[in-house]
Length: 478
Image (cartoon, rainbow, N blue to C red):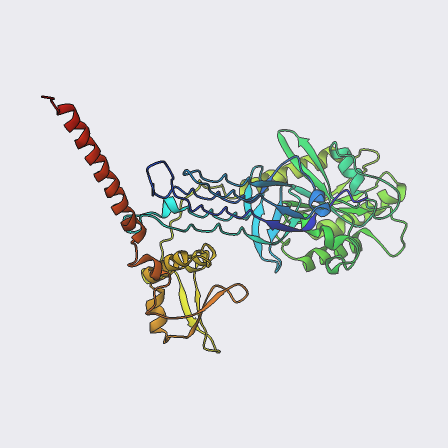
């Protein structure tokens, strides 16, 4: 059964926004009490958050489909809908978020670091929020926006200070088990280590983490063995330790050639040239291993490597190695630039940025693209003429109609708002105001005018009754 997963494809869906409500306040003796439709609730976000207690992406390997809850629709009586609940997904420290094309969206390092993988849709405004001095009683509400929907890739890159690299069965797992409290699987056959193991080492006042990367073989950077799957776990490490087997039973191998092959694989993978290296000649407790270590040490030191002869089994040379690694880790930490305080960056829009574009396509169709026009289209109920008229007003105020005319659009030309796969297409009529037939002039509602005479007649009848009552009280019999 799989216990470690460091790469998954996740299908995320944010919650949809709730629809706004179109409602009129109703009360006895008030035939038109005014709009009181509430706003729809916001859809929930899908948020990735680093949790130190999580070490693998196994949970998302088994259940890759994740969806946040939708916002509730608004109701009458100015009651807004409840917001959808955010879906928080815990990921290991060092998780990289990519899109399907391999572009990095976020690099999550550090406990509590978060990234909104899918944003919930906005809730639609109710007719109470749409009322104004010009439009006193809107008979429509805006629809809630759909939440973001898409696929992302999560890759785990181990966050450690030191990485142990080398051939299978070189003794990396044994070394990490004696340097730290880690308990990796150890056996006398290749590829015993199938997952990266992490351990914490204390050397004097320095505490650092060490990672045991599964064994590399020739061609690992091209996918042979397990190397390609786990080479990315070396990327974040500050120090690389070559663990070389001085007691190998394979006649065609020796520590120097092993080092050259591993270095070639690291070079092919790329991005690791600036990491300091240490060479560890392991298994010197074996007589032949001790002799071979003394033989190849001068050659390795001539290449500029610091060489340590150790035995993980006999606990020889471990203290010197751990303190040397602590010095390199301390130097690497000191060389890192200090994190600057969070700065607020203001990026004002260009003066000539209209917020949308109008382009003419080869088939003669005029396409409008922009955040506002596309959002307004998604919020419009096209079964309601008044809502369509409101959309036409908004587009006109934004300047879409003027730009269409500048682009050469004529009456009856096709206009599409939105992307090719999800656009609203209509025949453009610049002289016709959609939805104006029922409203009279834009911003006015003749229903209010019809209601006023009835209210006035009722008030007149009540005044007549009051006059008769007063006359009766003032009447004096003969």
